[in-house]
Image (tube, helix red, strand yellow):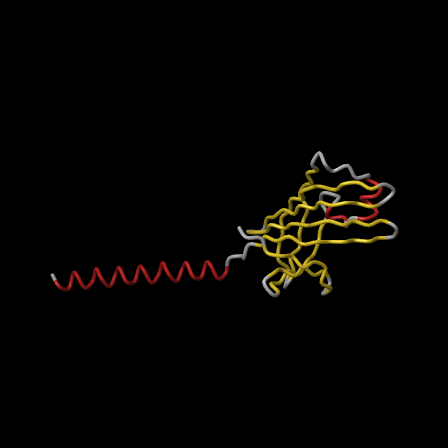
Length: 156
């Protein structure tokens, strides 16, 4: 009787250790969710975009919301969501744009958009390669080892 009780206790302890180690391994190797917002200002030629970019990424899928003012031939509003999937290549994430959803507030001229915004934000099917690292409580986005966005973490 005492041997059976000891075996049950030993089995329970073994199961708890297996479950705990499995959960710790999963939490260590699963991707950290990215939820952040950053201010951007892009000037290309005579055109300029000033606004915010919000990122959400987890489990190889994500979205980014870009909104702000585009100063081109005219002053217009940009407000769109870009949905993408991504893969890892060494220490970079390669984002592949799946679709772009413009809101009713997005009244930017296509000529100005094409001349100012990077292709990933304006054309479905485009790629963007980024290195994303945590830095001082935020996310630092870099392309070709050049920091391009300091993105403040959003509280879930």
